[in-house]
Amino acid sequence: MLIKTFRFFLLIILFSYLVVWLSNNPGKVEILWKNYLLETNLLGLVFVFFFLILFILLLIYIFSSLRNIPKNFRSRKNKRYLKLADESLDNIAEALLLGDSTSIEKNSRMIKKYLKNDLFSSFMLFNSSLIRNDLEESLKYLRILESIPRAKYIAQRGKVIVMLKKNENNKARDTLIELCQEYPNDHWFHDKLSRMYALEDNWELAHDSISNLKNIPNELKVNLADLKILSGGSALDAYYLSSNSILVVKETVKFYINQSNLKKASEVINKTWSKLLCLELIEIFMQYRVKDEKEGLKRYKLIFKVLKKFIHEESNETKLSLAFASFKANIWGEAQNFLDSINKNERDQRMIDLY
Image 1 (cartoon, rainbow, N blue to C red):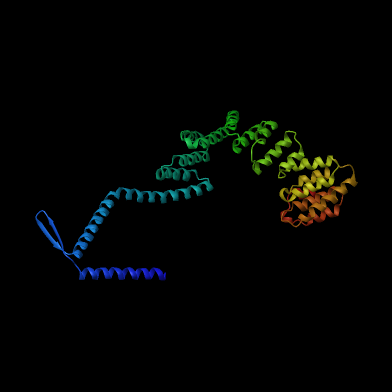
Image 2: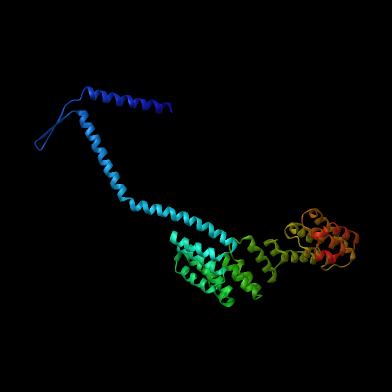
């Protein structure tokens, strides 16, 4: 900061010295132009050049301003349109949340007007038609999307959605087969094809439709694990694929009971209980292939050890499950105590039936 100040004062001193020197030594300048003689000094000549340059710059500025009037007008118009488009986008977000198809349609048309955007506006108008279940209108906007090169993938997904809404299941399945070949790693198309096969109880094809995908997301792994069980696959393979499925955990518990490995079966419930909180798991553990009352008591001790750590959680499923396990082990007092620990206002029909 100090150096800048010093430079500034130095420049002022030099400029002042130059002006004073020119005043004291003005010199003499003569210009002969077309029989006219112009006489001045060096200082006057400097001022003439200064005003001439200033005049030229002023002309350039005026000319540039006049030339940029249309450009500035378009710029102000675009800024206004951007602001209105921003408001329309906010309105569309709210309308999507509320399912307000009228607002979606109105604001989508505004987006098309303000931004000249055919892809987004056509897609939102397509969604608006779907919300109203106006499938004929949705097909109209789908054709517009198909005409836009960048919207090819969106249009293909939209086509499948319309087919499913029109209950054209066979047509949708054939279309999905083609699209799965075109997009071999697309999760959405393969998942939809898998669900189509599942509707036909064709579990093997449903499983194969998603088993070869790369980087399968967790929610799809749950479906794949279920399909592995339904198609006759190994319960352990399905469990290692995803332990978030009640069906898979049930079959895995059965598998270990068939192997006479009750401890391993209880460990499976221990690892998955906080995620699933499912009474069916305890019903299977306490009832599946029980040989006698002694084994029933052994199973109760194992499952009590597993579930007691979860008893203070907000859900009443653990208390109900312990009550059911006690009931099956013929420990009536324990069953009564677990049921009594559940607030009366929170008891459902299962708890009342167990009472």
